Image 1: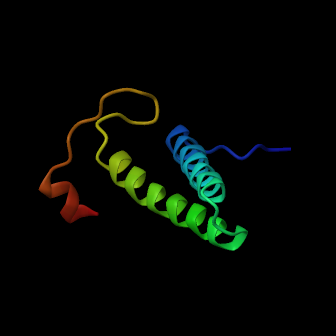
Image 2: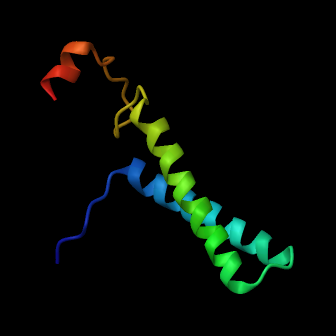
Length: 80
């Protein structure tokens, strides 16, 4: 059986986003909101976290192996 191999950055992003979403949902519940509102709060926090961390990782200067990569140039953007 072949295992699914995910990049370390993607796994870190997903675990962090799930933790933030769960934390927001729990805090919302403890604040006295209903279950449905707490779930929506957690999902909103999860979505926002994914957006922010994706932007942070997209501009990171390190690749998945932890080695420094060369900066992107405008020529790289034109090539795709």
